Image (cartoon, rainbow over the protein chains, first blue to last red):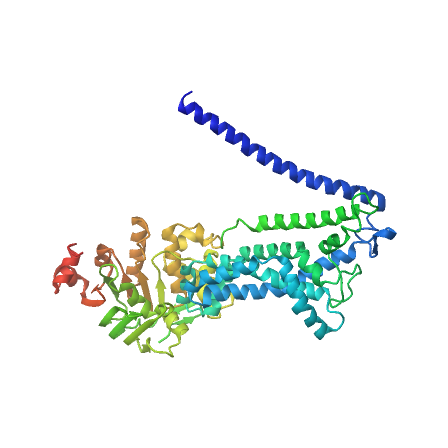
Length: 290
Length: 264
C-alpha cells in the first residue's frame, strides 16, 4: 500500500468517525424533542390546554395542572434580572474599555471571567445570606420572593453580560472614536453616537443570552424564591418558576406516577423558549459591528 | 473668525495662520517634539516630511489636541490657530476641533450611511432641520468632489464605497463642520495611485479656503501640492521654506540627504 493510499484510508476513517459523531448528536436532539414532545402530547390530549398552560391552579396530586403561575414566575424573575443587570453590565463594559487605562483591561476581563465561573449554588447560598434578609427588611414578609430570585439572578448574570459587552465594545476600532472626537464630539457624544450605536447588534445578542441564562437557572432560584405554586400577585411574595418547579416535583412525580407528564410539558415550554432565543440570536448575530 | 452659514451657503472667512512657538512634546519621558517654532501662513498648504518617528504625526495631533488621548503627555510652548490658543488646561476642545478638522491615515468612516457620516458633525452642532442638513451634506460632498459618485446612494453604508471614496467621504465629513484648518495625516498612504491623484487635486482645490497641514511620506506629493515644506528629524524642525526652494536648494545638508534618499 502506498503512502498515498494509506493517507486516503485514514481520511476515510476520520470522515466516518466525524459523521457518526454528528449523526449521534442530531439523533440525540431528536430523541430529546421526541421524548418531551410525546409526553407533553399525551398530557395535552388527556387534560386539554385550558387546564394546563392556561390554568391557574397547580395541585398535581388533585389533578390540577395549571402552569400559568410558573410561566408568570419565570417571566417576572427573568425580567427583573435582566432589567437590573443590563445597565450595570453595560457600565462595567464602558468603564473597562473606555474609561480606565487600556492596560488594565486583561486583568478586568480575568476578574469578571472568574465571577462568571462561580457555580450557581453559591449565588443561591449568597442570596440566602444577603438578598432574602434584605427583601425581608425592605418589603416585609419572609423575604423568599420573586424579587429575591430576580436579584440573585441579576448578580449571577452580570459577569457573563459584562464579558459579552466588553467583547462588543472592544470591537469598536479606535479610529472611529478618534474620528468622532476630531469632529468636535465630546467623549459622551462619542460613546452614545458612535460606540454604542455601532455595537447595537452584539449588545442585543448579549441581552438575549442573558435572558436565556436567567430563564434556565434553577438552583439559585429555588434557594430563594420560596417555592409556592401560586400565581404571583406581588413581586415580594414567594413564587416558583418553571425550572424551580421541575426541581421541586421530580421527587413528587416519579416516572409512572399520575401527572408525571406535566414535567415533560414544563420542560418542553422551556425548550421552546430557549430555541426561540437561539433563533433570535442567529438573526441578530453574525452581523458584524456596524 | 468663525465661518458663517447663510441660507445654506457658506461664506468663508480668511483661513487663519498657525503659529507654533517653542513647542516641545513628550510621552512620559520621551521627547518626540523638541523646541519647534514655525508659522504657517493662512490659506496655504504646508507639507510635513521626515523619516518615521520624527514627530510629524504628533505635531498634527497637538494642533487638534488629540494628543491628549495618550497617557503621560507633556506639552510645553505655545500654539495659536489665528487668535485661538491651542495649548492650555482650559481650552475648549470642542471649539478647537470644530475649527481644526482632521483626516486620518486610514479612511475611518463611521459604520453609518454616507449621508449620516457627513451629517455627523452637523448634528453634533445642533443642525436638525432635514432640509438644511441635506443642503450642507450635498455641499460638503461636492467640495470633496465625491457628490457625482454618491448622489442617489446617500443611504448606502459608507463601507460600500471604495477606499479612495471613503477617504474623500472623510474629507467631506471634516469639511461639513466648516473648519478653518485641515490636518491631513498621510491621507493617501492607504490608497491606490488614481485615488491618490484625486485627493491631491482636492487639496489643491481647498487651498486658499483652508489652511492645510499635510503629513506625507510621499515626497512627490509634497512637491506637487504644497506651498511650503517642513522637514522634521528626530523631533526637531530642520528646515521650513517654500516647497520649491526646499526641494531644489535645501539649506540644510540633512534635508538634502533625506530628499535624495541617502538618509537612514
